[in-house]
Amino acid sequence: MRIYHVSEESDITVFHPRLPDRLDLDPEKGLVWAINEKCLPNFLTPRNCPRVCYHIGVDTTEQDKQDYITSASCGHVVVIESKWFETMKNTKLYLYEFDIQGFTLQDQNAGYYTSETTQYPIAKFEVANLYEELFKRNVELRVVDSLWNIYDEIQKTTLNWSMCRMRFAHPRK
Image 1 (tube, rainbow, N blue to C red):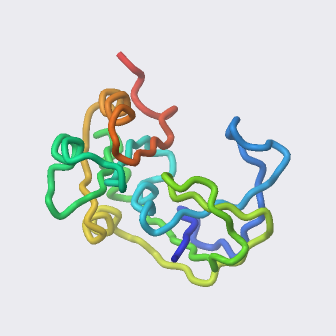
Image 2 (image 1 turned 180 degrees about the horizontal axis):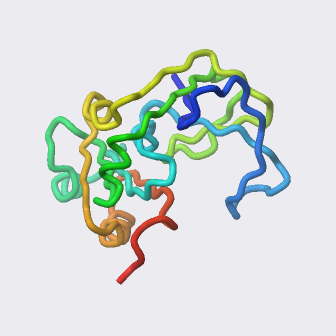
């Protein structure tokens, strides 16, 4: 298994644990975060780009596949707002790969791994074209005016889903 940290910064040589801002985590325990390769497409966007991501899981029904996956070759979808289209075109990302040793699974569905100790990347990869990278990974990209409809809908399905940076999304109407 391969795990990564995704960043817009090109020169990170060491990752120190940082205190989380999530309310469901111990605010006193610093963590280094990584994502597995299966869920990596959820982070192949600019950092603050709000997005709704989902993919087929072991419990996904045929009906949900038909209703929410339009391409037979794709089992993963990333939905962004149209206002982020240009920014995404002009953003370069860096994937810092870690040795899985020293990391523990934090969330199976989201593909999150964490470490409580300082970590050093074993490799770094540049992603200059985010659209190309998503397509290469058989990810369907959708561009919508507002994320809130799919945000509400997808949570009622059997798909594995993740919502990221929703505080930057267009306000609900």
